[in-house]
Length: 310
Image (cartoon, rainbow, N blue to C red; front, top):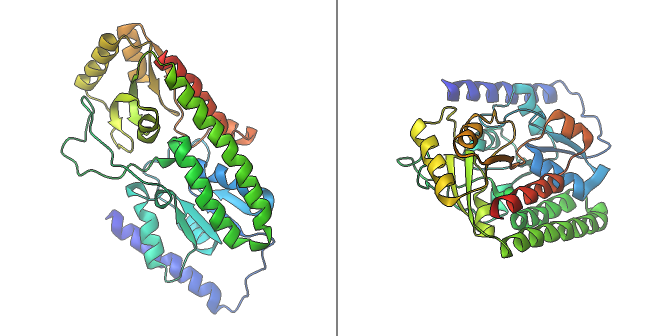
């Protein structure tokens, strides 16, 4: 039923586009190329590279949970008419693959998972809901600074192809931004050089496989990164409580937009602290309006990791 609804929406979208052409109306010239990013990480990377040279939009509204996102007809129409579309790719963005295959035109699109080497989500001991499922590529490639650098390089190429007259300026912006990301990466690694422990616990979904791999962290978590589960079994919570006690961990992590129920339960049972580790999927309306950046959020994460390992 869901597939049928989506195909019907795509058909309507295609008809709407054909109708606009058939009516003989010429498209109004654009002052700037329109770029649409599905979620916050690539949105922020693009604005650091291109500045105000493009008309940039973020598909996911600030403050919304992006897992299970299903675009409206108007949003699909906007995507099909934009000059560059940047999405994550992977299982969560299967609707994008359907859209790109069935719209009947060649859309200028870039997937973040195509800009980095990916690893599969893994089922670690105690994690709920993955033992018998087919492994899927972990889509959260932006959560490590090293991957962020690779993504910025790929997006820079796409933006320079879109605006060749502005290529030199955008490449200069990208070079300056890569220096900041490189410094962030070095600061994370410096924290790990003095680490007293290398185990962390997430009382949440776990979208930080790439960061943990990059830093050499062992992790335990309640759920995989893109899990649709909302309830966590008591056995999973008990397992995480045991890990905190046995490893003498000072705190557990939760992610943005969490109700923190599991983290608070573990903290109450163990006496540990709870800390936010921001996956950067999306930001609150307040933070978005204030101009918060990926670097701001990752610098906050650096403080959290430092607390966890020391």
